[in-house]
Image (cartoon, rainbow, N blue to C red; front, side, top):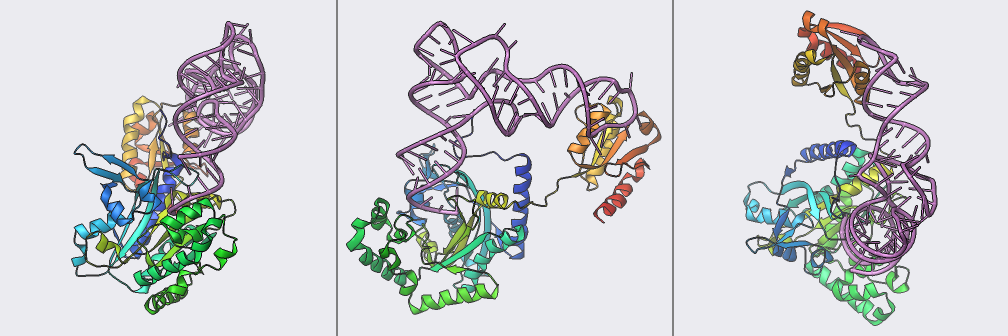
Length: 425
RNA sequence: GCGAAAUUGGUGAAGUGGUUAACACGGCGGAUUGUGGUUCCGUUAUGCAAGGGUUCGAUCCCCUUAUUUCGCCCCA
């Protein structure tokens, strides 16, 4: 048996790493005062068609669709926003006394695509959504979350790209201008661009093949088509980002693939030489019309989603060591089967007092057990033989200094309290 | 969805159409039956991704499938 294409198993060091980073996310979101939400990994297919957009590739050719036993059309979620918006509407969170509603989520997403490094069919995203405020402060805050997370983790090679699509009116005007610009010359562009011209003209700007052509350089930018209100909003976003000392680049080519965006859009990319084509670490923006589209009252929204695997890839590419726990406090060695029960009791006492400890499950010889203690990076080794069980005086060896202590069983917790404190100094 | 390359044990890997698939690390056992991380000895592949074919014979040749990686599309 092999794992399905584009999936991966988490175990060992990878597991520790993932838990550590998730812990950081949780702590960070707590500081930002966002609440946790967890929505189903599958939803009615229609939600994504309506929410994410009929013309996006994500929905037209990349979803995992299935019909359940009740003959309902379901889809494994390809992104997090649509489900959270549905939940916001269904649970009437818009009726809360305190606005805005700020939430975060973490979980698996699914897209039927050809896998590559940093691109999976089942992958995990961390993201946030903020509902109910049109203040540019929120846009800037949302951008600051991934930036600060990367900073906390020590990731240096990142680049923040921002852009504004403007409100509905600005966006429409721009779209028309773009079509007018490319229409006469569409035959000179690549095949993909011809397709984009029909489906989603904004994406032509993203083309790598035609990027150097004059027609690209002279193309109108979204910024030129912002009306006064949209322009003011964007200026404020920039002002607030500057207030936080966040370096950004206004990049008119950032248009995002999902249909629901309005005003601010942003992407953070890995600026790491060894990184491949999957270099967009996270992305997001404002979606003022989405809640209404999904059936709720007109409510503004802003959010972002971050690729968990790509984050870990970036950390590895930059050789960043994460400071998760790599040691245990104590390893218990019973000399024979006769001492196992006694040792088991000592082990439990330690564990219930807040220490992490382990015991020999393999009936190893004493030598092999010391090796095992080293492999587990145990700070202390507790040897339990016939003498110890009779006298209730444990033999505890500091595995680094090799000093040996005789400690009464009743005082073992005190011993660990004192000595481990010294270790941490 | 399109194009290309890979796939040998727990890990890194060598290798050839022909009896038992190098070497290293790691694991386990012993020398050393209450004290190790050095050294020495022994041992360690459901057999070379899976299935089929060619052949007297295939891990090595051919086909199919699976997975991985790279590029495109798209995106996290």
